[in-house]
Image 1 (cartoon, rainbow, N blue to C red):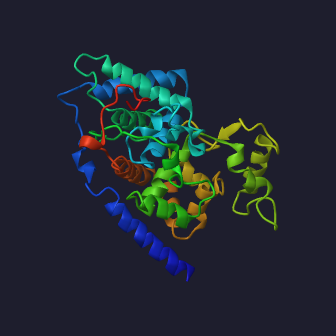
Image 2: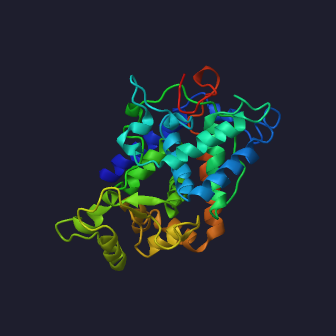
Image 3: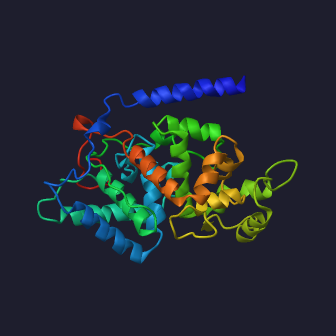
Length: 331
């Protein structure tokens, strides 16, 4: 009965994903969109990203995560960058977004300023497109694949904390929950497994996985799917009552490189979140994880496909969007 119910929900989610944005506005996207209006835009953005990475490595995971959090809430429209005002609590101040590192926002804002300072480019390039380009660049500059980015998005006209509710995956999610949430955004289970590899970069606060090492169940405090040696390491790094600001690498082996180590870790029982490790423990996703753990090229191609599809979610056009002069201000 439960399986049948999930199948029905998944079919419904897939159906909704096809009609969620009925005007298929992503069709306006194309490579080299700014070839005539701002031909150097991609090199300008890349230069800013490179300089920002020299200042701090956090730029890489922060920008990648910012793109994902933006696209899953109202589409890829840079609404997550908008600052709250006295009369509006914006997306970025929702509890699920409070851990977004400021370096991601700063990267987009600095790239926007550099683009607008270029003769002929002022107010021609959207913040949403700059975030998409910067995301591609941080992936490539950390060892991942480079890929052509489809451009032509407009920036969203609204940003509310309430719109974030229930839109972002949680670290405790099951495969069913992950699959349904990604399907609601037009993304397949394979896309979801590929995009999860973003966890090969970046950090997590201890509170996000403390239940797996201290209070998992009545049978034992440690999640049995967690590698015991890794669990002990996590307990050392994140002792009980640890400072809530403490964060650790999500990938314990190659934390500064975008690679397929994420999947190798899962095979070894070293996925940090429940939502990571379930990709290996669930028989439906396990074959893909196992393949990508040993086939980096296959993973990278799947990741490019998934990122391209992600970048098409909820694209704004016409009266539904605008090019913001200030990425943090709606007006």
